[in-house]
Length: 158
Length: 158
DNA sequence: GTATATGCAAACCTTTTGCACAGAG
DNA sequence: CTCTGTGCAAAAGGTTTGCATATAC
Image (cartoon, rainbow over all chains, first blue to last red):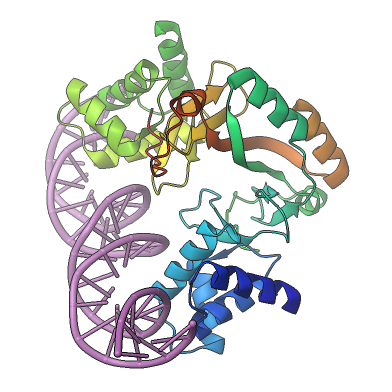
């Protein structure tokens, strides 16, 4: 994890961005919560524990910057908040998600399932693919087991 | 198109929703702009031409209703607005999109490309898929031809 | 006639921005 | 020392909600 942190620091440096404590704390929070899908507010609250003086605006600016550098992906599960998802080391595209419409849990799929599909699209449409977003909505195995029938709730975090 | 309109009216009726002129005008607008990806505001302006007294809140409520009935899909291309996409007659899932990061154009892919992928996921994850969202971001054929280098702009409409 | 739907305006939330000050390089 | 980055508060969207009125059935 420290290796990844150093790598990100270098990336910032190499693009002439300053390495402020706020940026460092934000990246740390993202690394410590890699499995989650934090909103800006979520990140803000977590960063505040390390750097209490930080402002929400700075968090937004930092996340925006990391998104431009393709260190995080800004994703949206349709609940009105943007969420920020750290890219896997060396990955050149966003990974996929399974969103449970009963309990709101989100699982990540690392495996790239779209290789063939992308080839077909680039050929059929003369479209040069740079990235993709793939999300499946359905019932997770836990909820299937529980036979839950509660109203669909989309909390999406975690 | 009238056939589709009637079908939607029946669907509303069968669920005991009232058939108001506002709802009818909203559905008409969606049908007349099937190729586009209208925001609530877009729909509002177009519906106003048919029913000038309509309020924006009613448009939101109607789109929300149509989304629940799975007549439209609420989609989000990451530009901060929700867009509403009419489902194809009989389709049981959202179709796919190609978003150009240069000119902002959005093309639709009718073909279902995810059949095999979904089978694999349902098997590997015991996840019961109800719907999906798939969007590719890249350079459309026109922009490739134009060799455009302008700054990326994401208008997403149309 | 009655319960649902509408219009308007205010409220809400997330995200962005302006500006004076602070601090990394 | 300079220019980028930060914090704060205000502004700016987009979307939702409360309430009195209108209307589909």
